[in-house]
Length: 430
Image 1: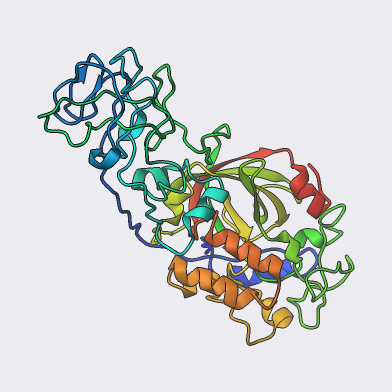
Image 2: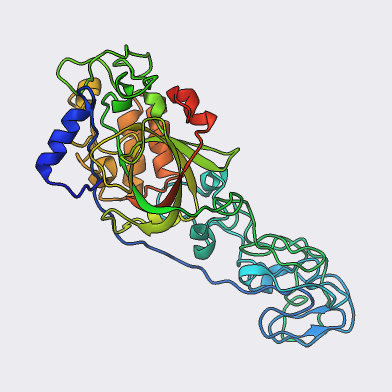
């Protein structure tokens, strides 16, 4: 949702200009709430011949939690008594007892290898397909451990056997192998895992830049940069079907009787090959066609209180947006085009889709109508856009998935050269 620190009368005037020549853009969005975070306990794994929690190493292997050392190497015990998956890395609990490496990352592997899905309805398999397994939102809260390979054993060799009479069960706490917890498998040289599955903020270079925040809208209006007087060439606008291109001189559908609307192709998406998202936005600080990289900081901005944890979940993730609308925004605000994001002051969607269409709250759209509930929002994507456009539904699903239904997330941003992913859709390259 969007907030602009200007009087209400100025919103109406600015938005009216967004649909005349030259048009201007105004929309605001609303606020969020608190984050619900759950954690799960986990044990520790040994690495480099050291026990994870209080255990001692023997000449031939590692023991669990206070067990006595063994007198020689042997086959590893079963995993039933391990604290966190019961496993060590190759250099950890090896039978030689000890030339391994450093301790494993983040406390070792998690307990029984099961999934705890994040709040909402997005399954762990989808989080993995977005490349999000390495984000702190999942790893810090022990979400999706099984799907993301963050629990279970490591790539370690077998450990030592435990003498009879020990306090350990069935061979001690060393396991037969598997990935170390929350970080990745330890190497035979004993280095600890730290990356796990590559996620946003781990494979892409991090940026520094100007502090700002993102809001959202989709008013169905012809963008201001679609007027030939504002952009050369003008970005496309579309006929009522949202797919066939309208004449550059056609009047906006936000004006009575207008026939030009937002093209559905301006919906945002995630590109796995670059591990970042792409989309289009309104912004006041630069000319039509300018592109900016946004890197989300995990905090809330623009009046949001992050009710559903979405702002936090975006931490470290990156998105490149291209400016196709100008007007009515704060200096550090990017208003991202997201289906269902709110129609703002100028509602062209009722004209394009019919007056019975569920458009959500005027400012904040479907998420505000759902009181920031991510499960409700996901259902809205299907019920509202399922019969309108698969492209719009995909953009709405992107919002509930990769974007984590975030409400006005804080970020840093910098201007970049426009990538082909965006210029191919807009016709503008800067």
